[in-house]
Image (cartoon, rainbow, N blue to C red; front, side):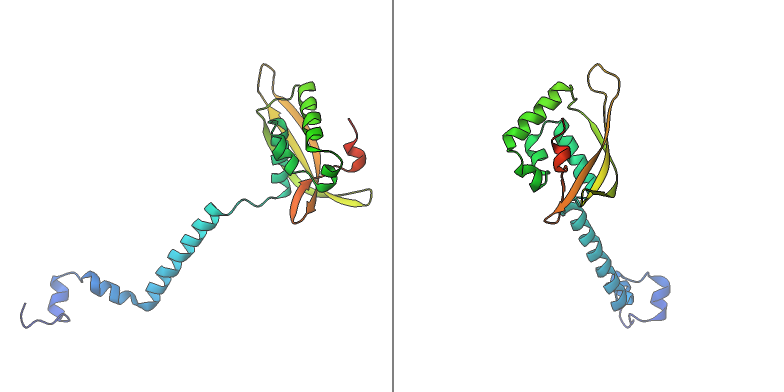
Amino acid sequence: MTGLSLYDPEISRREPPSQRFARARMGAAGRGALITGACVLAGFSCVTTLLPDVATPGRVAAAYMTARYERDWPAAWALLCEDLRSRMTFQQFAREASYVNDYYFMPREVDVEAGRPELTPYHGHTYVTVTVRVTSDQGNRDEWVDDGELPLVRETGKFRVCLPEDRARQP
């Protein structure tokens, strides 16, 4: 290939352009777009895999009910508000919760669905209430269903289950 220039019109008809020239034609804008796209994809991947889920009222209510039915007393206790925890010790909570679960033959394997949160005023306080539906087909019974509303408050930036004092004393 002596005497031929790389920019010779005859070469372009006979041979495909090399990778080196293809990259040169992409230009700075194309390379910048490619790098930006790769960075956005890497950032999205990191955010979706490394950051914890946002603790919405529905997720907190579902986590609390799941912990109660699965008898995970430390997890349920951790989701209670300070006001409720100040009215009893962890041992009292675990003993009473276990008694309720045994008395009503509550299943351990449950599916929990949380509804939309709503603001609910009650005796001068405003709670976020979430309708919760707990179902199970565990054991030898037909489908078991428990529906109810769970009040929550926001403490130190986190939602916590918090029964008003007069409701907490009801059996």
